[in-house]
Amino acid sequence: MATLLAPAGSPEAVEVALDAGADAVYVGLKGWSRGGARGELTWEELVASQQRVAAAGRDLQVALNIIAKSHDRARLFDRIPLLLDLGLRTFIVNDIGILWALRQRFPMLRLTASIGCGAQTVSDVRFFRDLGAHAVVLPGTVEPDEVRGITAVRGIAVEVMIHMVEEFILLGKCWMPSYVHLKPTPLPPQGLAGDARSDAAPEGNRNGFRQTGSMKRGGVGACFKICQTPWELFQGDRRMDARLFPGRQISRVPDVASYVEAGVQVLKLQGRSLPPEHLGPLVRRYRAALDGRANTEVIDREPAPLPASWTVVGR
Image (cartoon, rainbow, N blue to C red; front, side, top):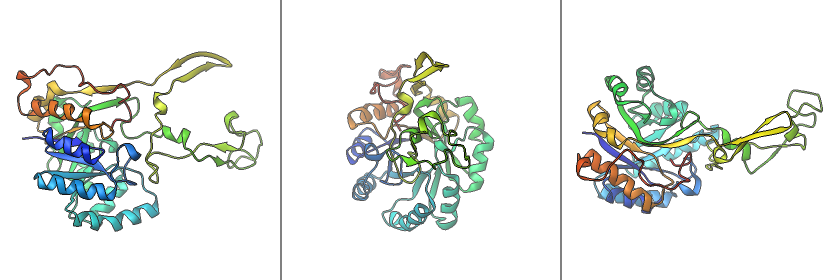
């Protein structure tokens, strides 16, 4: 029987997810997970949440999904024994190098290749199995019939992000926040690095500054929703239009039984940024479908009611 894995971005959300019927909950640890204040737990909150989840006889998982610099990797390896002492065993990782290093150093860990790893095919899943992952997360855009072939791969569990946001880029691989980092960096006086011409810098950079950074590099942990800002289209100097990049919720409630029949072991929900009052109904909706109560409850093909702003930053 498949299990339901729910997100939580606060201790209150952890409590709500458990009460709504989640079999397991995943959280982010401050400094090691995207989300900043909207979706990460402090060490003290993590300890309290682990105690609450363990007391309920369920599992707490930790998302480690920044792209760590060298010194961050060393700090992470120092922190893992402390996490193990808390009873935590399952970590969701989206950096292939980190996944491999954790497998070598801490063979007792249960490692999940995050949706950010981009696995969508049989070959992808075999790769992550051979790398040392115990589970891999597929996007909800992979249909049950295709998943059936993927779950035939032995030695690795298959999870599906069954409620998620479809992005115009590969989910979990966004570099756009680098355009609006809050710490501008001076450009070399000659313009672009490696180019001695003073006019080599683009028009927006000639003032000597550029915007740098990433929500997944070095623990920045913030998304500035650049994809939700209108992008202007120009032809020469003439402004032609303004467009928003697409982003829509994918709700696969009607397909829960099909995914389970296809051999999916974990149904995962996106949304660590969701407040508890929106998370509870979402988890209950999928709990009912997983328990076979979909025919007696109001479950249709429309997404569960969620904030209009819950798009790309909703995980």
